[in-house]
Length: 254
Ligand code: IPE
Ligand code: IPE
Ligand code: MG
Image 1 (cartoon, rainbow, N blue to C red):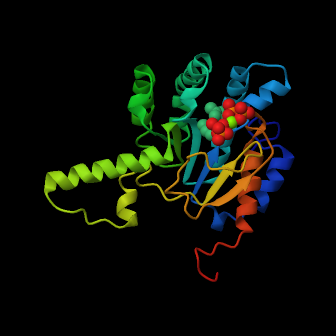
Image 2: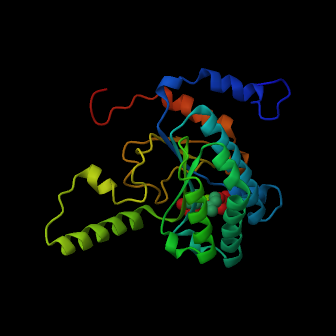
């Protein structure tokens, strides 16, 4: 990269990147983006300003993930429980997603990033659902990173939806489903994606908050005190370095 290129990594980011073993990357990294409200409060700003600042973190993290060559990145943007927030905050979050799609779709295509929304999309505002579908279609042929954005997503709801669809199919075909755990995964909105190897949560919270419950069975959990609006690709790289030092056992003796 030429000197002075604004896309070049800062020296401290490049130093972390250089330590990552590219032959042992996690296939799928998932992130619970948390702390936007606290970031804003600490600056005397509104929670909505915090969410707006968080969009920059998404952009940088996605670029960093693509540059590293990750297969899949999934971010939790709006949970099925987040509807309980004030109406204005919910509307602002939906607007920010729309703005992201308007501004980023061409960039996603240019960077070979496949966009995939997950969650109960039919429960979102209809114009947002249409825009999500358009960006997914526009990037369908992309073969680099798969970026999944979880919206109106709840892990329990996803499992229940899968069970309902399996039951409906069994009734239609008049036979009990022949399913194992892999087969069940095909009924989840993440079908086709590998399970997350690494699950990041920002802002110091250490809970799963109904995210990817089925898929995260053996994910390595990494938390940071960094609030989401301060999160950059360097933090993603630090999480991956920590992941590469973990001893994954899957119930065996390693
Ligand atoms: C994460 O930040 C964004 C969403 C959950 C939509 P929060 O809005 O949860 O921020 P805190 O946890 O209140 O700081
Ligand atoms: C989880 O964050 C949901 C998203 C990041 C979209 P929350 O801030 O909603 O989770 P809790 O309420 O702290 O568990
Ligand atoms: Mg929160």
